[in-house]
Image (tube, rainbow, N blue to C red; front, side, top):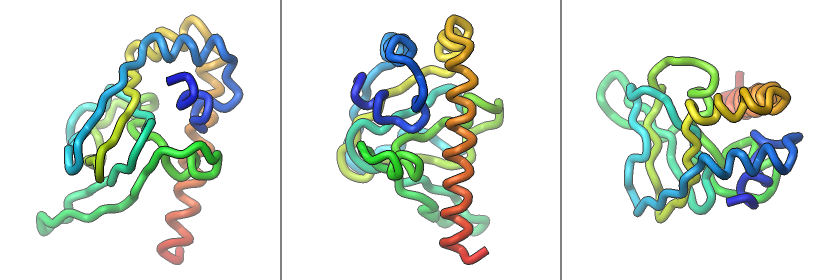
Length: 153
């Protein structure tokens, strides 16, 4: 689990003891192929790090059809981490319901970090809180730039 935390873009700049505090509150979950891990519209209360495998981010169109808007995968490469490697990070920022569903494509292992417990870790390590929020902003900025390039805007 520590290796996944060390390689995650969200925790760049965090000290080893801060990542260890995250590992203490995290749990590992395995999902078979085509399992919905989170559902659009549900409350967001957990951050997920993809330890192994690939997930699809799925939204439902007005006509009821599904559209895969992103694929996120485990990776040790930093640039890949900025593109994916985790989901549910918005649960650390806002209280809105989940905007998309996420399902496994093939077997997937994730590390689940409950937002409520993560906030307790942030209270004990205030510098870490700022570091993680800045990293989330960097990741969201990168994802937006990639989406703009993909859609030609």
